[in-house]
Amino acid sequence: MNARKERAPAGQETAPGGSEEQRQDSPAPGEADREAPQTSSPAPGGAMDPGDAPVDPSKTVLVVEDDLDTADSIKVKLEAQGYNVLTVFDGLTALETARRITPALIVLDVMVPGLMGYHVCRLLKFDERYRGIPIIILTGKVDREAREIGTKAGADLYVTKPFDLDDFLREVRKFIG
Image (cartoon, rainbow, N blue to C red):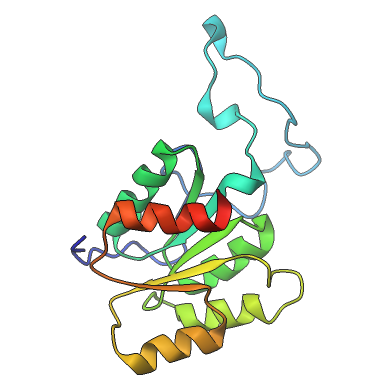
């Protein structure tokens, strides 16, 4: 897959279920004491609102990619296979999000704004609470040195761009079914 570099603004993320709204770390006024519902409820007319559906943590994938085309392609492919996908566009937001939601898998571009992907990987893999999360590094860096840095940072798999989405999906399934 050839990626055209169109960068998303730093600090933005998209929620599972296809919503492009920015998620907020702090609740809106008056929502701080409200708990999120544990089950989904039908929308008017009996249809289920995808935003209300319970999220299966074992199928949640955090995609960290600043190229919008690549991020969207991965998200569409994974969601079509039943995965819940959360997309962020910079390293610091990736680290904060991973610590907040503990995804089943992280797809991590190396060259993202803020905190480089290698650093995000290392910080998570060297933390007892998050070291079990598989991390697939996805990057245009094809040289041996870059691959070694990814391995030393703790990446479980190193995939170079361009890549085949079907092959990529097979790799995802090896980690989280």
